Length: 125
Image 1 (cartoon, rainbow, N blue to C red):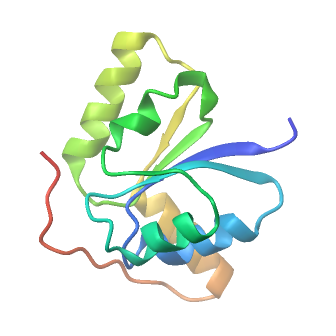
Image 2 (image 1 turned 135 degrees about the vertical axis):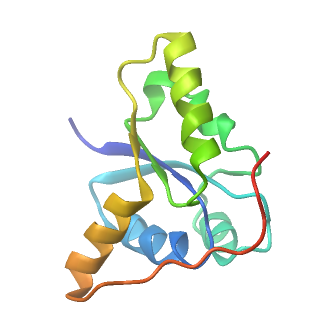
């Protein structure tokens, strides 16, 4: 394994700090960043760094085995449910869905303190 291919869903206050860490990791290949709003700071950062962006998080799921881990920091259970259903329907046993709480744990460990998550009123349908 040369790198870990990661897709990130959620590019706001929780996703952007994580995105910065992922972009700085030489062993990470970011295959895409998804958010409903192009105005989110993580979307702008991803575009600046040449990372694919989308407003449809399912675009990342459709990459199939081309993504190792999808990190969901939306805090929206419906997102994880749609991802799981898609992977079951397509037989994708490769891609792992990483829950927001795990992302918060890893970011907190790297900063030596518990980081908080904040979510706006935008909802995924």
